[in-house]
Length: 279
Ligand SMILES: Nc1ncnc2c1ncn2[C@@H]1O[C@H](COP(=O)(O)OP(=O)(O)O)[C@@H](O)[C@H]1O
Ligand SMILES: [Mg+2]
Image (cartoon, rainbow, N blue to C red; front, side, top):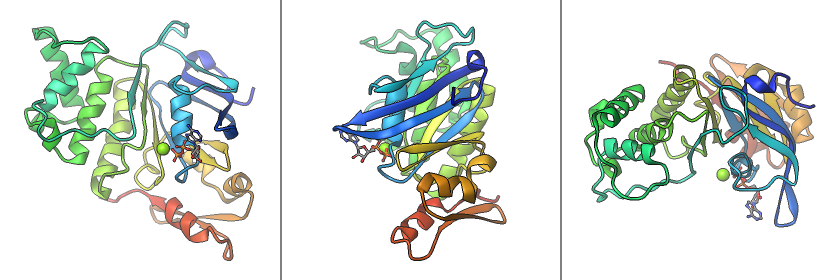
């Protein structure tokens, strides 16, 4: 088996999956494990297959080969809860819904109709608002909040039912540099404190390098996976891309440089420049 051992302690086991869309393989032979309490990034350029991988994990696309397993705390099968925040969530500013109401709706899953208020519900909502540091804007209309504030509310909405796995597609994409770093740090913290496996995708790893436990790096339809130290290396990425790539560490930043003369060098250098915001 291509992934590390001990699948029963893993929330997510992706084993040698291939996904074919429109008659061609989008990703092949992708394998990795994610444990509860771990925070991982699926990193790759636009079109690398990040959304396809996440949708396959969620069961929205079918793997033509390989398997995806999601385990609850006992390691048993069944239907463990998975939270999902899709790529673009547009919240209308005129929507008469407070941030705390949206978090509360996370408790009701697919059920229709307005939930009945109760002290137990209010307590759970207050706990989640505190966990994502959103008390200060909990009574604002959710559509009027900043991008970073909305992401905190969407995270609380997804986590309130205590999923074993939270999947988020490009949650940092529309945020400014400071908000992206702060949401990334929050997610890393929540993975530990809420004992949930968190998997997010990003085309810019910049805010994530310092806080990810694991990285699943997609290029050429394949993945390199491991810790940041294991994956962000010249030899590993050169093999993945199929041509020479240098990984240069400057202070707190990581810059990936493609050999001069490669027509895609500029794109890659921009995409792959990464690091952590210093406070
Ligand atoms: N339903 C589909 N049918 C055919 N091709 C698709 C479909 N969805 C995505 N693709 C292709 O799969 C590749 C990966 O897309 P995607 O997973 O959205 O990448 P990313 O999220 O990394 O930008 C792209 O080339 C895209 O055009
Ligand atoms: Mg995508």
